[in-house]
Image (cartoon, rainbow, N blue to C red; front, side, top):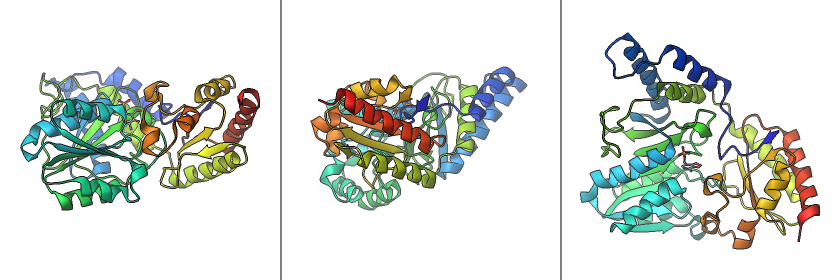
Length: 363
Ligand code: PLP
């Protein structure tokens, strides 16, 4: 089996699996209980929180059910808390539905939404900051696009936005960028299952001094921001995944170069991922073969890739247009997303079966 769909989800690493099972067996107390078993669970959570804080800097880390919840908490929570600061939201046309849909909802409720597409701006960070005015309550921008790998320099974006309006809250959906590129933001969303951790666990970093209204009301766990009994085993699994993450930019760049060279030798293949993209995601279009046909043809060989984004389940997401990818090219786009375990030999097998697929299916 050749797994090249790591932007959809990753194989849990052995350390995460061990941490989950060990914690389930030996540390199953409720972290809110006052006895020893509860305190042990709280200690596991606090240790994981410290590990994550070490990745983000000064602020708090809240555990959530995943990045969808982190994004919803960040977007709705910030707009509710800071609504006196204005009703304009600046965002991008390439967001994942987990950010785009909450923002759409705010649009329906009277917020003024400005969405910028990378294709329209040479300097995307500057364009986003330029769109900020004294009524802008929130900037929400992903760090790395899940479909093409397009990268935003979010450290620079953060500085530029604050220079324009110090009160504007900056939310970064860093699901695909965490552990891969430098990050900054008032609110940063991450997800466990994209970094070889368990599914159903994510986190939201909240910079020191930033306040948020809760999305969920209940027992008041996690400083009243995220009610609900903490899933201590998933939190331990997430921490193990963060501590042992093996992805490496230089290695990904070698793999990308190998793949891109192979693709350039195939007639009718165009690259949708540019130099502004992380090297672990390579998106390309194969003229005359629809994505789903190629995906299933590769699947017959136990090679797993994605057409566009797995989260949009085969539906055209509208995101390719934000990068200037035509509908025709979007219809035949394949996303290969690699992990630290990916090898050149696996990519060669992929290339071979792409060629065979083209011979069989090209119209
Ligand atoms: N944001 C981005 C950029 C993603 O790629 C994904 C998942 O594909 C999500 C958010 C949603 O994350 P989760 O599955 O943890 O809810």
